[in-house]
Image (cartoon, rainbow, N blue to C red; front, side):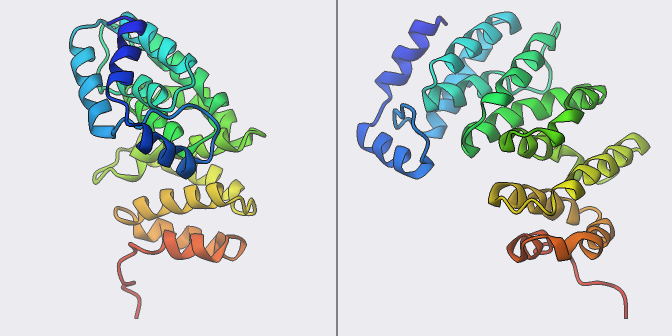
Length: 231
């Protein structure tokens, strides 16, 4: 699949009215074609099956550069796969390179989902994104939490996983006085997911930092907490 062919397929699936509605919803100035997410999933699945990793990375890079909403989402979907053989280094480098350009949650989340796969594949890469939580770019700070969400979800975490949880919770703790809605929401999201697997750690975080958080974020973080066993 070439870039030209991919754009032709996206334009053929476009819905002008839906594109207008999406532009209003996302509130970021870029082109919106109105292509539904299931259609993007189908494109990604079909094209991935016929392309090696380097070809996919090249196509993803071209799609991203168009700055079309659906093209950027599709770029991320092309790189969302648990295993990228023989090497995933170029895909990981591309995903990291996108982060400074994040400016909207939907594109950022799809790119972070692709990045989650690469981090889980090689957790040592966490050192490469450590600086994100200190970035002046709000979307980069948010990405540090979204891309590490897999470590909220293990039922049987290993020692390394527990160390990563503690590390990311340290990042989250540095965010609690930043009352930007998207940052507070990201902290709450991380804690809410973790509460399903380690409620005591979430309670401890909220006890230590909840007073500094926005009330809506505390409520959201605690929404899935089971009843406390303390009498």
